[in-house]
Image 1 (cartoon, rainbow, N blue to C red):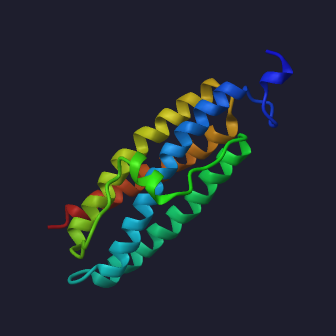
Image 2 (tube, rainbow, N blue to C red):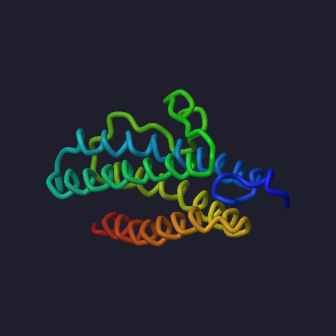
Length: 161
């Protein structure tokens, strides 16, 4: 592989583009999930209000941090992160939630979002691993282990009744 085929951090240009494209898809899903989590936080009512209001704030703060990390990783690989809401909505498999105020429904929507994110992250982990892209691999590994635990916890909440 000639030097002209490497990006600024020494990874193959073509493989980095593949990873960046997939990171942009993940970013789009995170952005829609983030806005959903904000809506859940704002609109939650009824039983478990205090617990869920606080939990959804934790969630959207975590998502906001990951959104920045994903965009910065795309930039580090030498590409441009998506930044228009119309692009996010066109690409995201996480669907917009509207007027969700019931706690159980909001938690179900959170779990549906993780059901989209985790397979994408596993795909990125595999792709980045095959390309010796340790930075992306490490990020995905961290996200996966954290989110698997969150899936267990949110699922346990739904099993309360």
